[in-house]
Amino acid sequence: MKMKIKIQNKKNLALFALFLLINFLAFIWFFYLGYKYGNNTVSSFTWIPNVFRPKNFSFSTEWNIKNWNIFSNQDFGFSFLYPKEMEMENPVGLWKYFADTTSGIQLVKLKVPKIYEINTNFSDAYFNIGISTSTKDIQNCFLSSNGEVESSSTVSFGNATFYEFSGQLEANGDYYNVKSYRTLHHNICYDIDLVTHFTDINSYPSDFNLQNFNQQKVDDLLNKVLNTFYFTN
Image (cartoon, rainbow, N blue to C red; front, side):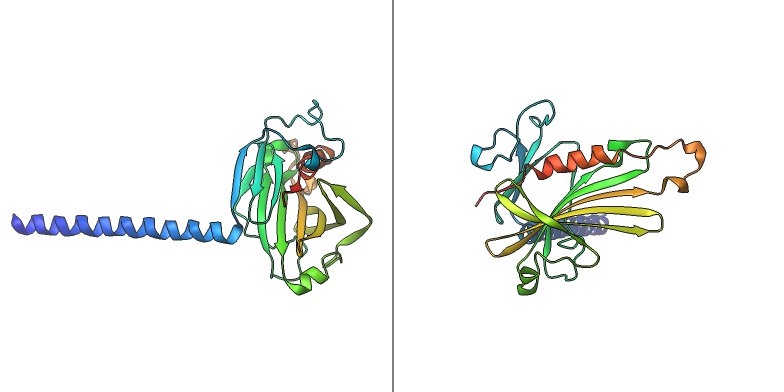
């Protein structure tokens, strides 16, 4: 009987030690993510000071952003608003969509889920933000790369001016339309990507009864989020 009790006690101690180890590793992992991706907060939207308010910004029905969340990154000094229906994902991609270097980091990966355009060939869409501090990326911040097409003009939103780029990728019937916006701020190259992912509607059986998704509807949502972006320092 005493031998069984000792064996049981050892098993309990081993399980407890394993529990402590798992929690310790989880703490280290989340600490690492916080260090790598910056000090981020998400809270309910209340107000944007006039100095940061984009052109044509209003609380009209057209914008309908009163119930949006506000995302803030204190380390790199920027904020933006987004609807609660969008999903914040772990930012583990390249710092810009058409990146030719891996020196930067992705800070934000915000997803528009498929349900936004249900019963269509829409897959998902993303609002991504990345930065790079490498000398090469800063020097080439306003140059196109890997098939991008540079716009002939700049665009301004929030409190900054951005160079605009566009591009499209296709792979096995999946299409990715990309609009990118880049600016230099405090000697850091910032890149904001609006990515729309959809599939070839002809690749589905006709009895699926799918419709072509509303590209304008998706673009409008991503652009609304884009136009709430502003630097806080």
